[in-house]
Image (cartoon, rainbow, N blue to C red; front, side):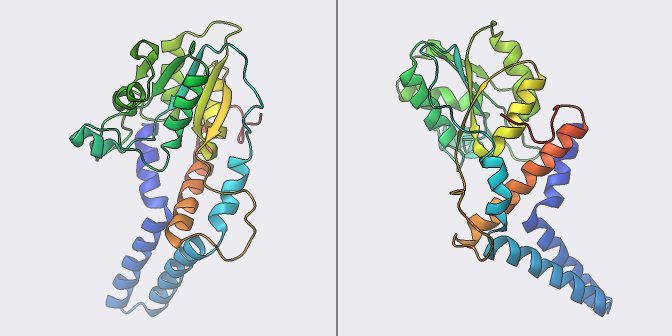
Length: 264
């Protein structure tokens, strides 16, 4: 139920959809001659779009998330495994075309390949199903072998989990699958903005990991004011950051993490 509610909530909560709904409300209000309602709804739609697309709001919302966990200066000579959270592939495209097209979170897979080359003894775990309610797609755990083996990672090193639909299930299913031993070092790779929620969920599941953030969306030096990024990227940053903050709150309130904003 949590999974379905989260997907439905996010459909209505993301800024672009909010703006469209407000525009629709404006049209209805004009037809019904509710002048004040139409003015208010249209003004709110304009504000949401302008704040998201033309200001640094998204970057400022991202900073506390992306700066929360830093990559370690070094890793032990021997690590047991590298866990890569799904979300880096274009599942709908790959399901049809059979390739390994990456999306804007594809840096996760690049970092996994780099670390795998540095640590040839480590297992490489890719965890992630489709996580979509409507659109069909191929899970990252299914697509990943085509890319990683093409990059030189031996098939015998791969451990694949393709049933999880969200980060909570990533943590639970991966812990059960790898059966980590005390004293082992496991590295967790995901987008920097997603790392606080991921670490909190893995800790709650009893799986201690070393965070290795990737896929940064900001420089960390943006200040309040007009955005210097293109409007679509700025609006996307607002959407992603809002989703993470809401996700952190929801998981904490549901008892799935022990901290609202997990710390190093």
